[in-house]
Image (tube, rainbow, N blue to C red; front, side, top):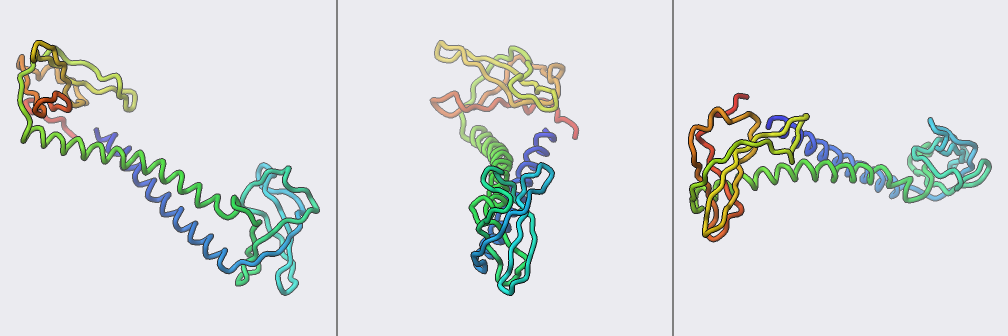
Length: 225
């Protein structure tokens, strides 16, 4: 359980940080575009670890030459050494020039936004699920109908694995309206077999429905931290 809480908090925290980075990056791009003017540069080569980052030269409005390597990789078929490229030049900082194009300005904000939505979605989804599950449990205990179910055993929940381990859960069944209904307890990260000292367990459900339900296993000892 502590591992799951750590994972969801890590994902949620990473998502928040990535979204903050996306917002700051988008703000920086917008600020740059507001003070940028169009000009042209000349490709003089390609740099970076894989040799796909265009290296270009250009002149600012005073005629001062500059040399810069793009901070975004490119499809090499789009450029050739000696060819001209459209640039955006910061009027307030002549040394700050970028190749003009959606990818060159917006790749960084999009990258952080995608990661933020992905990690944040998983993390906050887990938190929402946990809170919803806790609220539903309280509602069932307060307003749900109670039935007795016969305990049939303890099993591993193979549908969930954390760090190579699957949790245990108690299985019970009850004959209601001529039909057998199967119930399972919440996941337990210890083997409760030695502590199941009764034949029946209470199961709470909403009137007229048997799902969702909650199995009362408060008779079990709490797991140490």
